[in-house]
Length: 230
Figure (cartoon, rainbow, N blue to C red):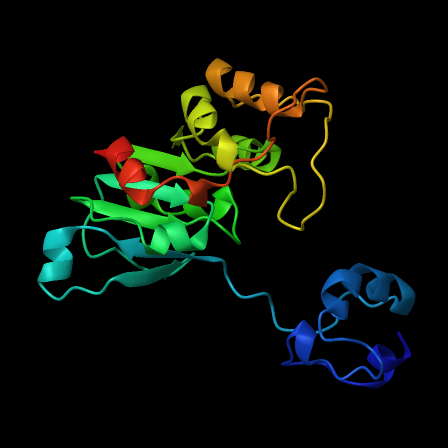
C-alpha cells in the first residue's frame, strides 16, 4: 500500500510493478485489497489484455493449398477465419486440438485456458452447423461442459458418454490433473447437462463407484475422435 501512494504505476501491467519481496503474480490477486488499503479508486495499471482463442484449421484442401495451420482470434478485433467452419471441435486438451486429424470444413479450438464467454464472442464459431465439446470424462470435464453451455455456446458433447467410458475406463485414473486423489463427492446441479451426460457424471462421483473416476481424452485415439464428427 505504501508503494502505491508514493509511486506511479501508470503504463505498467500488474506483473511489471516493482514491489520488493513480492512475486510477479501477487498483484493480480491482491488488487482489491490494495485499493481498500490505499483508498485509491484505481492503481493506474494497464488493463488486462483482451481474451483470445487459439485454433487449428483441419480442412485438408485448405492445408494442401498452403493455408496456415494455426491461428488465433482476439475479442474485439475484426477477424474472420480462413473459411466458415462447418465443424468446430472445442477440445479441453491443447494437444488433441493441435493434432486433430483432417476434417473437411473443420476447425479445432483449444479449450484450455479460457471460458465459454470468450468463444461466445465469435459468431463464426457459435454458428457452426456442428459444434462439439470434447473433454475428459471426469467431474471437472462435465463441469466445464456445463459452463460452456451456460455461457451461450451451444455445444454437443462428444466421447463423453457411457459407452466411451466403458470402453476406455481400463486406461483411466483416480487422480486429478494435480495428481490429487479423486474420491466420491456430492454431484453439483449442472443444469445444462443432458440426462445421458448427467448419468455418467453421477456415476463417476458416487460413493460406491469402484472403477476409475477419470478417463482422460488423450486415452481415446484421434481416429476415433475424427469418426465422431464426420
